[in-house]
Image (cartoon, rainbow, N blue to C red; front, side, top):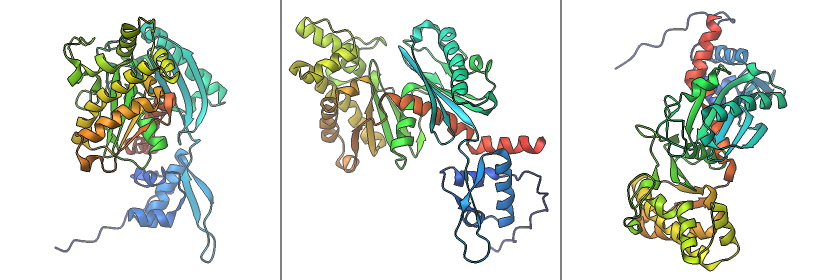
Length: 406
């Protein structure tokens, strides 16, 4: 059926913000410079519409002229690209015994960093008090005013209800249950505050900086607990209540009646988490190991029993990951967390079982690789969480609407 041609757009003054500017902006987010003609071709919009939307984005400071394009005759066309220095974000990774925060521009480039030995068990007042002071210190160090701060991303070592940013029954975070983390931070900084669990932000950080072309990725954190951040279709999958990827409490064949801290028996974490490995080695050697670093040091020293124990932990983790591979078919599984520092011994055990137990088609191009970001994955991902919010279509449209109202 023939359709009527679209009506011509009504005249718009050059000072009036253009609706739908986010459509143009999303094409410039990758940092690649483009001309108005290229943007018109990619969007199918009229050049006059594209010009109006680019002007709006420039007024917001999110887009800036970039050099000049080659001329085909006459004046060279102008190039436009994301202006990463327009605003800044803070990414914070709060672990069980440490905290780290960075200030980054809109491209994710780090501008300043702070680290602190800090126990999550000290409670929200102490931990978030540190974060509030740290945000101010980071801004001062980078010589940026507080008005340039666009958002704060935070990773916490426990289950988080992502929509509200509230920790829900976190097992190693006494005093944090259902605390309104965003509200406590926003009492000092009137910006969006995004909160997620640590392994989800690790997945975001690893994928954004080291696997940017990968749309199907699992990041597995192996430490005191064991969990996974799942990216599918290019998006983080949190599940209905934010508990997707909680691998540590999946029952494994060797678990038998081994009691887990969750109250169930036979959980992966009770068999292959850092405390379980410490216990196993101490029982077999009458040793006095106490931390995951003790286990790692023993493995690196070439201790035969420690190597066997860490490799068996890899096999147990591989049992669960083989099911994940068959179920969600990732193209990359990244292994991170403190026990990943044990190196190839852990990965060898994981690969051994994953490739043996998963369907051949699912593993044909599967890569099981160590984390490249290492201990920085979380803080990098927290910054990405904030940047993705600031540069989302909804945020760009809201900024355009505020500009129009002003």
